[in-house]
Length: 165
Image 1 (cartoon, rainbow, N blue to C red):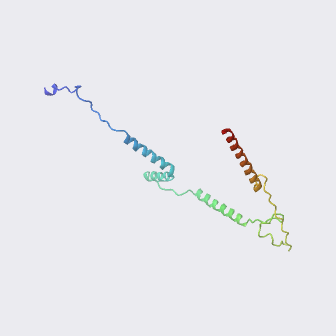
Image 2: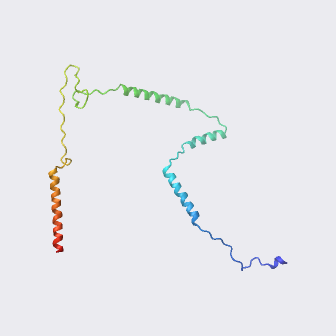
Image 3: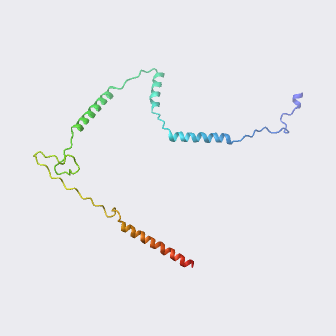
């Protein structure tokens, strides 16, 4: 009887509520996003090991025997090594022999005698002329430009003084 006398759905009780600030979780979230961004930009992570590990794990779970490299791969590797050795030998045997008409002015062997016993005449040093646009400006031209600039400034200051007067 006592339990039936109490109205459990009465509206006179205050509502149950809990107020908390939301800024601490948002601050943590922003910090984690920032650190994640820095990590992604600055740290290079390679996942090249994942396929090998997953293959080993799969083989272990399925109790498969590991198989060595196929024979055709060994043949390819040996052929690649033979070709690279022949290319290296070909590069080592190739030498540069300049022709007698080439410019030897900067070569240390320019003064060596030829097979016939006569030494070649040293070639004339090429004259290097700067391009007109790249040539240095002479000092009189710089002074001329400076003096013209100074005259233009004086003219502007004189005009300002006349307007103020």
